[in-house]
Amino acid sequence: MAKQYDVAVIGAGAAGMMCASVAAQQGKRVVLLDHASKLAEKIRISGGGRCNFTNVNAGPANFLSQNPHFCRSALSRHTPQDFLALVKKHRIPYHEKHKGQLFCDDSSERIIAMLQAECDAGGVHWRMPCKIAGLRKLETGFVIATDGGELEVANVVVATGGLSIPKIGATDLGYRIATQFGLKVVETRPGLVPLTFDGPSWEPFAPLAGIALEVDVSTGSGKGKGALRGQFREDLLFTHRGLSGPAILQISSYWQPGTPIVLDLLPEMDVAETLIGAKKTEKKQLGNVLAQWLPARLADGLLLGNGFEPSARLADMADAKLRKLGDAINRWAIVPTGSEGYKKAEVTLGGVDTRELSQQTMMANKVPGLYFIGESMDVTGWLGGYNFQWAWASGVAAGLALGAG
Image 1 (cartoon, rainbow, N blue to C red):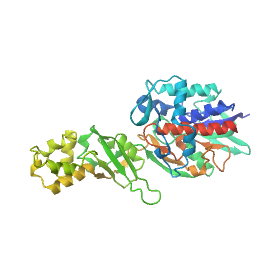
Image 2 (cartoon, rainbow, N blue to C red):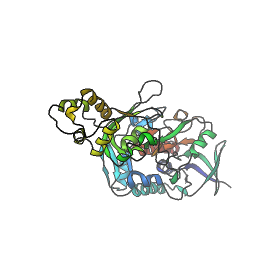
Image 3 (spheres, rainbow, N blue to C red):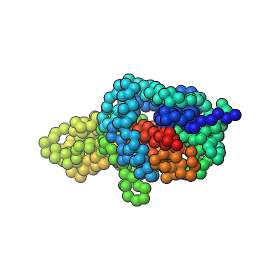
């Protein structure tokens, strides 16, 4: 005889635990299933182990989706302050870093324990590890086939996340379930991920690995149907294979293969005009002049990469050449050949098409009782706590709807 529940949540991560706790605390009989033996590994490793659990500035403008207005309702009904109230209730010490990012003072384990305690307060049943073998629709619910037997449930919530970081258990189960029930899935690709360049083109810059600096980065024209333009001021990090750091992770979600990203390495300065203006009085070599504003290795690398000798005297340089150098520093356009892929991506772009879902409840419009939350759907936040806020907000939206049903 199949065991019966009001709600089965597939995926015991951020969104899944949030949804399960909300539904269970409203009196629903909830079972939480996950194929992993270790709970919420993505929370555990986030924020360098301290979990950047939300961002005080989170709003619809911080999210990418082919259906950009979808996230408004859930985000407005469960705000960063609402989640912070839960953190305070559990007496978890936290601090704000720059740009509204909130982190645990000690360990991300505190957030996991908080969510676990909220689930236990509602009497959630745990099944871990539990592999899903199949899902079929009944007239009044679903049957989930697992390696521990069948479960008969009234509602199913898919909180399986995306494809990012397969070594901690990411799978495509959520997309397969969506496809099985005739829901569209927006093509997926790695997001918030370092960008790479082919060997020969990157060879002059590989020795700069380890250099970091604040830059402006942009990509896209914003023109044409579906075209997005991204622009951020964040830290950039040179690596042996390409570029990383918050600036690149942010812009990677906007970057389209085959198109350039544009870097302004000195965003507070018009380099060409500054160099031209300094020619009359500056006796230094070009490399030493640039080293006043840029790391010396980077200054020399940029000069050599653009056909300049670092030892050349600034006073001897023609204005036209200095304008060329200024462009190379203020408007350095480079075309990545790819990214580090899902193994290094913090999130997955794309997913279940939100036009198939109710923005109030997260339920599939044409499959009553089937819900999608969190990263499984086509809603992707910026770097800095935004994706966790979407997990909490979408989880609460579905949990409240299930509790009221």
